[in-house]
Image 1 (cartoon, one colour):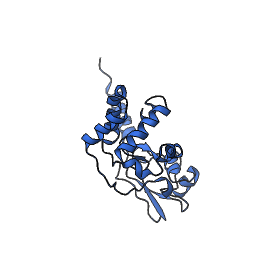
Image 2 (cartoon, one colour):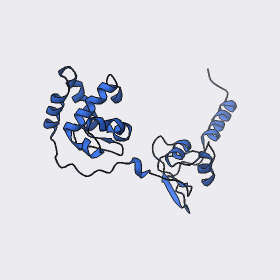
Image 3 (cartoon, helix red, strand yellow):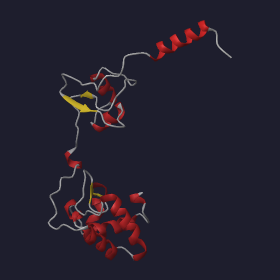
Image 4 (cartoon, helix red, strand yellow):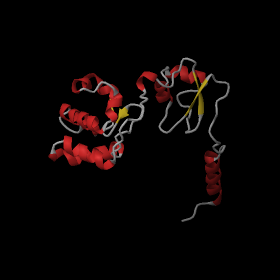
Amino acid sequence: MSLPRKPLAALVVAGALVFSGPAPAGAKVATGCAKTYSVVRNDSWNRIASKVHVTMSLLLKVNKAGTKSLLLIGDVICLPKSATTKDPSTTLKLKAPAKRYTVKQSTAIIREIWPDKLENRAIAIAKRESKLNAASYNGCCVGLFQIHWLAHRSWLKNIGVTSAHQLLDARVNATAGYAIYKRSNGWGAWN
């Protein structure tokens, strides 16, 4: 069955009008801002406002934007003067540990500290979390089991851990990891 020529032509023209528009340009860059922020994957106006500790309405106002304004990865937006990008009290900055452990040593320490029936799963978790690198840490989490220092420091002192730096030791971290396992009655902290 064929369509008459005039309706078909009208359909093609209408489709072209609907789908035509300016081609997407590169990332937008804000100018004349006191502070800026580069949009990353999964950002939204609300997430950015939370990250920099301002209200979403203030962030939108500074950028002359609305909640429907599109954000693309790489866009550089303005931040209000009151924005704070990192809270120094919650970001760990640790010196390199005095002793470095090999993967083999870290594995042996986990086998020594964890019960036999749990050690294989513990090694798999440490491998996933830190690649069995006892000196591994990021802004919040430390060592073999990537233990969140700020979340656990209140009770870690009960097992002798009084600083995040101590968690860079494989033996201390494996002991703390096992304590977390016992406190949570399972692997919940790593799921």
